Length: 134
Image (cartoon, rainbow, N blue to C red):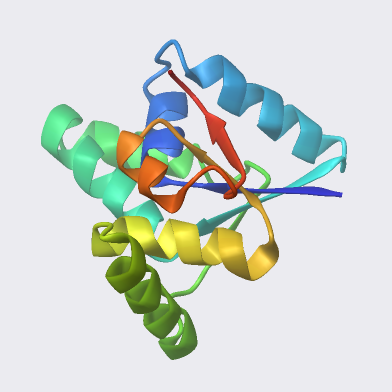
């Protein structure tokens, strides 16, 4: 089964219905048909909420985040071990710490990272990515 990890930008684009939302929607459909597994770090989930608070306000942010609950996305805790792995990724690839949680989760589950954040190019061509925009 194909495995995906969403970074904050991927979920944000879906919730804000940006042009990239269609690609995220396709992955969600795959997961609904049990052809894919989608994961996201709780750290990145919180990052989405913070962005929505900033651009949409508290009521809209809460409404959009409640729409995530029924989606086939497994939210995974930032355990102490995952925090250390994220720190290793941060130190190795010079990523932001929150971004490092998404990358570390993708490494842990041998998953494709879904992103539009060009900072993830630092991970190199051998790292499986689904780019939401070029």
